[in-house]
Structure formats: structure tokens, C-alpha cells
Image (cartoon, rainbow, N blue to C red; front, side, top):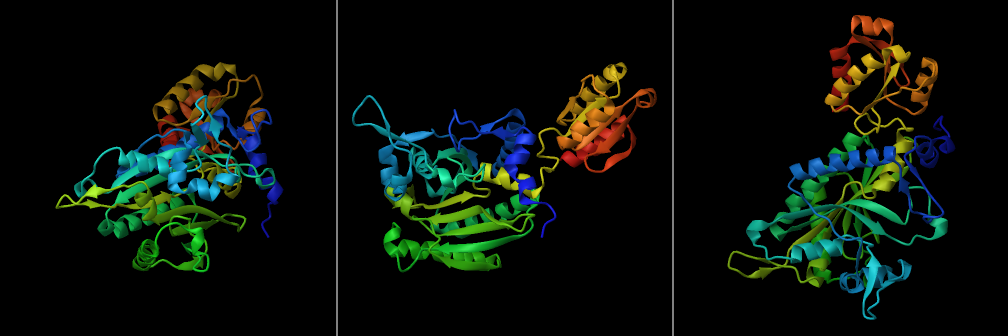
Length: 408
């Protein structure tokens, strides 16, 4: 049994204490409001993912928060989820109905469809931090883990059949890299297939499903993954490979997912021109290494007990002058640290140093730089580490370098 109670580790409690996010009845249940610190946290995650995606050949796009109802009728999402979605938005024109975006994939299909592609152009990898809206029942809402508005680290790869296996394996490796960087070292892998007894729940031909399922199983074998088969867990348009991480409380959470889809390219009449100028259907890979950013943040907060990795934490360091006499020296240190892109601030409150240290500990700020007469005279800084206490007195350059190296 973990020595920490779940209530003490509840992300809602920690998130409120650290001023990351709030909920407001006036805004609506299941709709989180991100405070400045929490927004920095989110942005750090997004920048991390944007950087690796750019290096992997993804192009960032942006799509609207709403779409015409006919878009989701074409994709099949309206038939599958329409009854449980937010009601259509009526416009002054009687024939127009819009929906809050429940999925990003139909929009990405339209991005691909906006121009002609040759086989030489593929694969095309479109990525977006796309916010989607789903009407979860009130009794099912829970903090950030179950909300009505959330952002997916979504991407869709349009490739040829010959490119499918290699692209799928590249996404697997990307998922593993992200998990390692976030400190999730224990996970299970699940191949999610359609239920052969309920074929009517899925769209597309048997041939398309067989090709998609075989591609995932082959990728799993070639990557030598320890994965189990789960029938009935596929998306309605295609099979998928799901990744479930284990947190510090021994709970399993589904984060990453990779899906192979032959059906939406047919529904949206997507094609590319082959070597002899013939039209061919691309294969579509849906992938989200983290899934919902909101859910991930909730898991991370509880997994780390609020002690986030230094590269993610909103405030990496705080400068604590013992008295106003050392403010000028403190501002010099502040500017040097800011020049190193360290997220640092100066606590100028007229409070005793013990109070400042205690507050910094409660706010889980990783590094505290204590400055007094001895430090100013010798051009040094005194460092404290959250949870460890005093770790030493350093020259300015050595102290800042030590923090900088850990932030990268």
C-alpha cells in the first residue's frame, strides 16, 4: 500500500494549491480554467511535443473549434456519437447546423483534401493541439481526468500502403521516447481489434479491417513488443495499438494510441497520384502519444505528488534575499538566470527568510537561491533544493550552470 493517501495526492487538491487550474460553476461543469502557472505547465508540454514532432517531419496545423454537421455525418462520428454530443448549433440560416468539434480527424482529412498530392509527397504528417468537446454525463466528470473540453496532441499521417509499416513503427518509438522523458517507465501494450460478433458496430469493409489489423500485428512482432490482443476495443473506423502506463499509485491509465484507418480516406474521397498518374487511396494513421493533455497533467501531478520534472515546472527557481539590502544583488542574479532561460522570479516580499523558504517549499519550487551579506560580499549564491534543504554555496556561474544543466 502506498504510504500516501489518494486524497492527499488528488490532482484537484494539488492543482488548486499550486494555482494551476480551477473550475467555475458560472463557466460550466467539466470546463477547466487554466491559471498562469498551469498555462506555463501546459505550454511546456506542448513545446516539448512540438519540438520532437518537427524533428520527425510533422507539420503543425490549426483547425476550427466547430464544424458543419455534415462533416461529422460523412466521417461517421454523428451516427456513432451524435446522441451523446452537445446539441447542434443553429445559425440564422435554417439549413445550417454546426457542432462543437468532437474529433480532429475529419478536419485533418479536409486539410489533406485541399490540394493534390503525388506519391513523391507522401507521407504527409499533420499535427495539431486540437481542442475537442464531448458531452460527458455530470456523474462521470472528475477533475481533469474526465472533462467536457480537452486538448489532444493529435496528428494524422497520410501515407502509401508501402510506407504504412515503417510510419507505424516510427510512431511507436516516438511514444516510447515521450514516456521515458515524462518518467513513465512501466506500461502495458494492447492491440485493440473489432469484435467479430458485433461487426455492425464498425464502418468499412472486412478487407480494409483485415489489412489494418494485420499491419498493427506485424509492427508489434517486428518491434518485439509484449502486447496482448483485446477484441471489441477498436475505434469504430479502425484497429489501434494502445499504451497503458502505470503511475506511482499502481493505477493503469491509457495514454498513447496509434490507429490504422482505411475507411476515412474512402469516406472523404482522399487520393494521391501514383507513378503512372493513377489515383490511389492513402492509408491514414491516427496518433496521440499522450491523448488528452488535461488527463495527462492530472496523472503527472498525482504520479509526481506535485513535484514535477524541472523542465516542466512553471517556476524552476526563486531568489530569496534575506532583506531589502540585498535586492540589487538579487536583481543581478535574476538577470543572469533569465539570460540562461531559467524560469525564475524574485521574492521581494517584506517577510522573514524562514517564511519565504516555507512558502517556496509549499509551492514545490525546485531551487531556492538565498542571498545575504556573505553571499554578496563573496559573489556567491546559497542553494536549497525542494525536499532536500541546503545543498551548498556556489560561485554565481557554477550555481547557475548546475540549475541550467538540469533544466535541459
